Structure formats: C-alpha cells, structure tokens
Amino acid sequence: MRRTEPTVLSALLKELLSDKNVFSKGLVEGKVLNSWRDVVGPYLADSTSKLTLRDGVIYASFSSAAAANDFFMRRSVILAALNKIAGFKLIRFIHVSLG
View 1 (cartoon, rainbow, N blue to C red):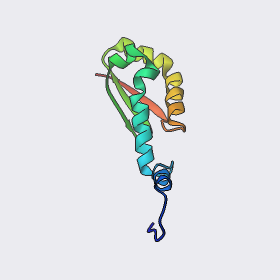
View 2 (view 1 turned 60 degrees about the horizontal axis):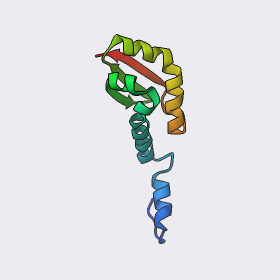
View 3 (view 1 turned 45 degrees about the horizontal axis):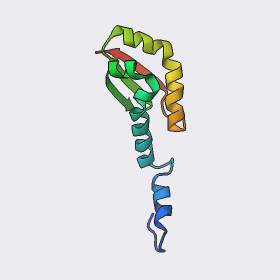
View 4 (view 1 turned 180 degrees about the vertical axis):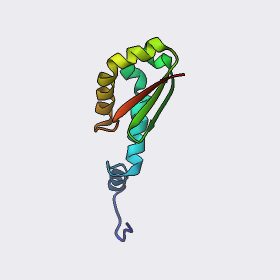
C-alpha cells in the first residue's frame, strides 16, 4: 500500500508486526522454537537432536528412545504450553522421530 501522507514510525512498525503479517508469524515461530528448552526441560532439550517447525507441525528428533517415550507421555501439555507462548494455535501437531 503506497502512502502519500507522513506516518509515525511506531504505527508503521505496529502494522509490520501485526498478526496478519508474514514477518510476525516468523518472529512467533522463532520465539516458540527458542522456548523449547524452557517448555520441555533440560533432559528432553538435551536429547533433542533436530527441531524444526513447518506448516503448523513441529518435527522433533530425539537421540534416545527413553527421551522420545518421556516426550510422548507429556506431548499434549507441551503442545498447549508452546501454543500459549505463541499467543494463538500456531502448532497443530508434534511429530517425533528417533535419530
């Protein structure tokens, strides 16, 4: 949208970071992934060998079966906590693998 009138910088930044903007979604995804350790705890975080978020699905790869099993038992609580951090239902599912 082209503007012809001067606009306050704070208003432009607010528009840029609004929920409907692609930049804000990327920021929220980064915030969620960066909070992984705080949400799952140090044991599961240290056992996570790969973590990505794509199209509402987190792909988490664990280095041990015991860690993956522990994660499965807490998956719904972890999913709710991550979506709470996002502020909306960003994550639909968490896919777990070993490796």
